[in-house]
Amino acid sequence: MKIMDLKTEYNNTYFNCLEDWSEEMKDAGNHKSLWYEKMKDKGLRVKLAVDDEGRACGMIQYVPSEYSFIGKEGFYMIMCIWVHGYDEGVGNRQKKGIGTMLIEAAEKDCREMGVKALLAWGVSVPFFMKASWFKKHGYRKIDKDSIRVLLWKPFVEGIEPPVLIKMRKKPELVEGKVKIDAFVNGWCPAQNIVFERTRKAVEEFKDSVIVEIYDTTDIDVYREWGILDGVYVDGKTIQKGPPPSYEKIHKIIKKKVEKLK
Image 1 (tube, rainbow, N blue to C red):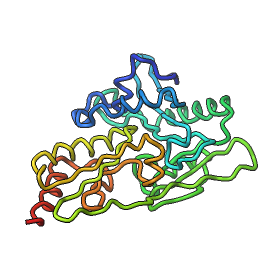
Image 2 (image 1 turned 90 degrees about the vertical axis):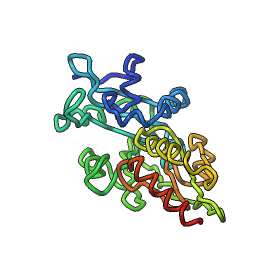
Image 3 (image 1 turned 120 degrees about the vertical axis):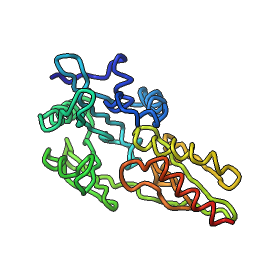
């Protein structure tokens, strides 16, 4: 097993978060590749764990912190660390120390760049990106918003910890219409799946629905709203975990439209 920087030959695997075998990933569109094109010259770092057969089985991506959940310069933020955990594709590679190899490589990289601290976000429940995993690797909690936890590992002394940007504005309703507000960044295929399924579901109800799309790769847009990703139907988020199915999203919108009559 070796840790390496992303190479072009692995782009498709990376854009699909190691799950290029997955049918569900086809619903994510090309948002991550577009995000990558925007971010690759703005400091995005990507490292892969590649086995002896040349197969990518783990990844970590980290960005300058102004493009992350804090919207403030001066640090780097781990947006995603993932070791393949399914039987399909390269198989389950978790619980073998690959995540530790990846995060240690990222920390070494950041130290060499002179970064003051490496940040991470996690969740306080046993799910993807568990905050407890980062704590085991020396990261300390510095802020929290609901189940989302901000952690950091400072590399120098005497620096103030940043805080999470929390929701600053709530999508407004439109009388006589179902209002859909979609905040699209592109960094995460799971979020992209929700957006694409919503866009497809809306087609049936065009006359009754107003859709507003916000590109949160624009830092000013993100700072204005405090929402990096998410789809809101009449001001309420439709996702509180894994991506809801197309059928569920369609049902939510249809129910709202029927109430207009």
